[in-house]
Amino acid sequence: VTLAAEELHITQSTASHALDRLRSILRDPLFVRSGRRIVPTTRAQRIEQKALQLLEDMHALTEPETFDPATATGRITISANDYEREMILTDVFREFRSQAPGVLLHIRDTGGQFEEDLRTRRTDLVLTPTPPAGTGELMIQKLMSDRMVSFYDPAVRTAPLDLQTYIDAPHALVSFADAEPSRTDQALARLGHRRNIVYLAPSFDGLPNFVRGTDILASLPAMLGGTLMQDFAEHPLPFPTPDIEFRQIWHARDQHNPQHQWLRRLVHGIAEKLTSAQTGAG
Image 1 (cartoon, rainbow, N blue to C red):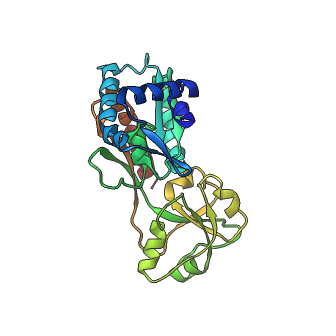
Image 2 (tube, rainbow, N blue to C red; image 1 turned 135 degrees about the vertical axis):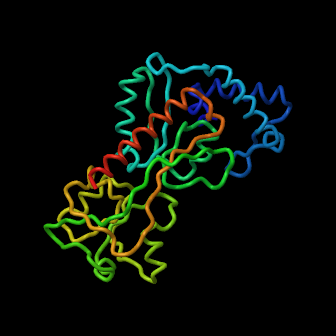
Image 3 (cartoon, rainbow, N blue to C red; image 1 turned 90 degrees about the vertical axis):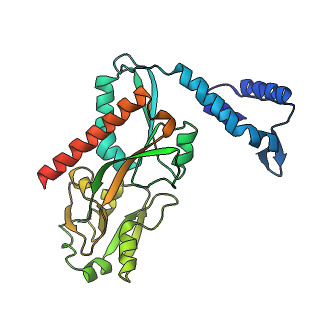
């Protein structure tokens, strides 16, 4: 109840009182103890989808038919990991300050449950290279592609020009929670090889400090060469790997929401500019 109250931005006593009223109205305890856990009753499980639909219908009544960012207020939540934050969301935030100064932009880590976060409105939009697990509830739009390269400190080592040099080198790997093997490692496995990983990082942003002054290779999206990895040399991977496709994902209920349409156009436009700049530089 305490966690639910925090999620709803109400006090614990208010949440407890509301739960007691629901129990009285529905004549069911709704949630009961099971060992050290609290679990929903069968009745609670049966009415969950109906309750969610009622909440969606009530929420739709409050949504304006038009959206004016200049006068808008409230909060928009975007889930993304640090690559998307670094490459896209810094410019998104600048546009928010310019176009929608009254709207709070809340950025969250994507985590491993973004499908559920979209269903429950914990987030409004997800930016990720990971496609959802095949649900018709979610809408997907490609934003941009990036290729993988090896970053290294040129004061310490030379470029990994061939596959054997690459395999023998020590590697740093960014590994998010519950992530599958990286595309790079999957490509190597198809060739019958494994690389020598000596450092696992939870995100991109701290990686430069670990690579600098060492012979470690960091295989990362190439566009980071213009930001986080700008002090390092880079070289294409000496074996074929597929490009990384980055997407924006949202719930189908927001498909025709004017505010959400404005948000998606803004994000897509910034990704297009980034792709054009990268193409021109290449």
